[in-house]
Length: 92
Image (cartoon, rainbow, N blue to C red):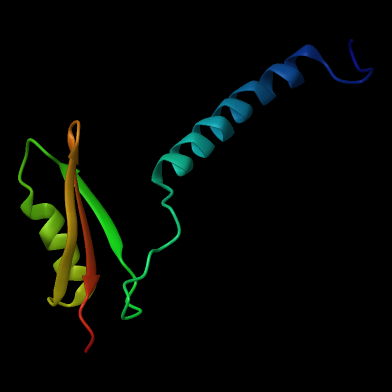
């Protein structure tokens, strides 16, 4: 049903905006993470990902940068092309 006063060109101009909004929402949902999990001592854990086939040091470098150099590795796993590192920063 056509709404009076809305031209076809106006409605077509809204399509790229809607597509962009959907793409942005999909990208943000892919980056979302679950709520932080905490260790028994209260420290929050963080998960970082890097390519499993490449240099896994990038995961360690991310952990090192976030924690100022001192962190504990909690878990590591590989899921397809992705290597996951879960860590917790050491208390200062």
